[in-house]
Amino acid sequence: MAEKFIFPNAGIHFVSYKIGEADYFLMQLKKTHSWDEEYNYIFSAFVSALRSITFTLQFVMRKYPNFDEWYKIRQERLKKSDLAKSFVEFRNHAQKTGIIPIAKERSFFEGIFYNSDQFYVPTNSEIKKVPNGNVIELSEKCLIEVLEVVAECYKDFDVYINPNILFTEKALKKLNWTVEDVEEFVGIPKGYTDIKYEDDKLSDTEIRLGLLRKEGGDETLQKYLDKYLNNNK
Image (cartoon, rainbow, N blue to C red; front, side, top):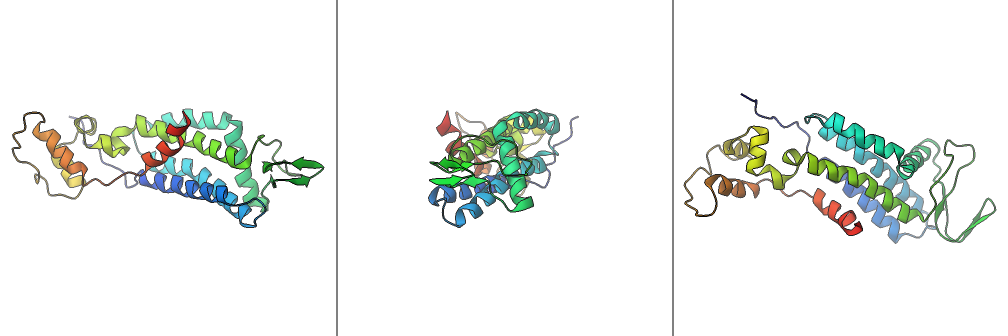
């Protein structure tokens, strides 16, 4: 008989927090003029939060079945992305040197006139090339690349981390759980919802899971996926 799945003590909401952090700083970046002193502070915070999303995803998911093999494929995809690679370099360079390699809008820098905020290659640095384009647009594009990995994880491991799937019979079967296990999971005494509902359309199990779903809390991750991915298809 298969053993019941035991959830590790780390939830997907930690990933949501990190995405929320990156989202916050990106929104602040959009509101701030590049000539303002705060601009570089905000960008530095953004790239740090952006980079930590995948770190947190690995921390949260590492104990789930087959995640390591699943993530290796996505990790290689990010490594092959010139944009994602550049933002890792920006983060590392900022942390090691304090330099944010951004040429300000309508400025001359090393003999080049910049109409918009753009990245430049710092002298004597490990950065050998930078992506062309506006800083904010490239920042959002890189966040989208990272969120595409998160979205795939949310879909492929849905029974473990998506509350809309967790409270279904599909999840019960996958986890080898009973409704009583779900009751215990959300902090309700086992058997609390075990009554005869006499519904013509839904089974007692479906009704009980629907009631328990209300106790499971709301997941904010989908909000960010909708904001950045569904609006960019």
